[in-house]
Length: 302
Image 1: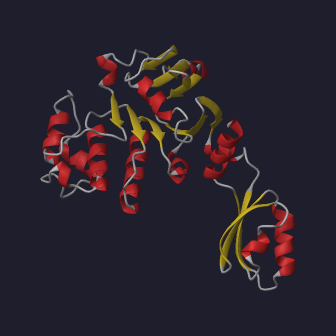
Image 2: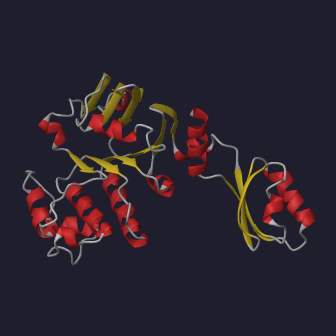
Image 3: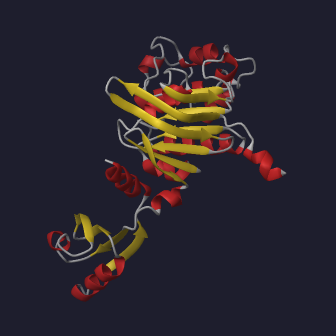
């Protein structure tokens, strides 16, 4: 009974067979996508893959040429559904002349039970910014304000499109912490990001888009398993130019005092390193990361 009930829960956001065409170009080619409560779904892929189009359909900014888009089981333009979402897009259109406190007050007025100003400040890291004019803020500070505005209405679903662009390391860590707290409280998140370490840190599921189609989806581990490549990091006296000619070596980066090799097979490369460099040291071996997998998957699709 419990398994059946879980399977019938209405997704917070859903695309079914969604298709969108622009003149002679197909931006989305019949994709299925959903976001459930309490999960982060990372939508990844190169520029032009269809990520922004997918978000536009779910927000009701675009109309599908085929299939359907739903928010909380309703069409995206329905006000009751829109009041339950928070949105942080790459282009915000926030008035430069308003102070941060005024922006928060204005946005909070749109909701019946908004978050308190103090909660918004704490969650987005806005200490000391309330009296500053938005247009006078740095790019990273503006992104933090946009995040606070997206959280004002206590959304059950967040759309975050490249949210940490321009943020420093400390601000990014606070952002990640806030996302984890929101998700633990049942919020769903649809995230696009070019910082793939961000997807590795946050995502419960990853969907990889290429040329308007889904080429892979699953956990971060599932996506990484699509490529068999490994990384070898070490300190060696062997010239980088020579290493790049070895069998099984895809690429070599760095200088001789600290290099990184991407290899198809670890054992023969590691054995040769040990044979040819008696002073080899600081050796590390790890599976290729999410970024390597996404690049490989999208290259194959192209």
